[in-house]
Amino acid sequence: MLELILVRHGETAGNLRPTALGTTDLPLTERGRRQANSLSRVFALKRPEAIYTSPLRRASETAEAIAQPHGITVETIFDLCERRFGIWENMAVDDIRAEYEAEYTAWQQDLADYAIPGGESARQVYDRCAEVINELLKKHNEGSVVVVSHLGTIRCILAYLLGMGIEGSWRFQVNNGGICRVMIDENASGVLTAFNEV
Image (cartoon, rainbow, N blue to C red; front, side, top):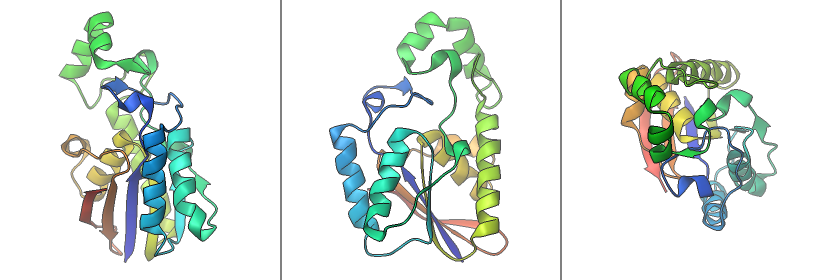
């Protein structure tokens, strides 16, 4: 069996208030760096088979900290990026409501399929995450593999592996530096064994 370990990146300034951070490429805060170092210690005892990351700095910095004790080369996968929020990128939720009232209302009425202008829908994120996982499962079927990514993508990956569909993705909340573990059998069926460990 394969243990897929999903790790949310450490804290950034954009995580300090409700923000559509998206693909805005912020570095880790000091607290975020401490979270990454803590993750490095958690993973130091058991060497993963591979470590994959989103290309965004907050994820790649976290992944490099996890890899450092083992000398593993981190592999970047573009489709592990956070959701592209288009015209809402890096905006506080309150500002989005005020400045884009019509678009915000349309989104609230169709959370799964409304594509933010210049961005993507939740279903598009779900579909690309599913493709990433399917490709990883072709490469790995045992041991442990670490994927460092973002709240939106981790929610989608969990929902996909647990057979919940896009609608299930909103049932998960993972903190910065949180770890989720999924055991995956030869039929690509997932069992959640740990959630939001910090």
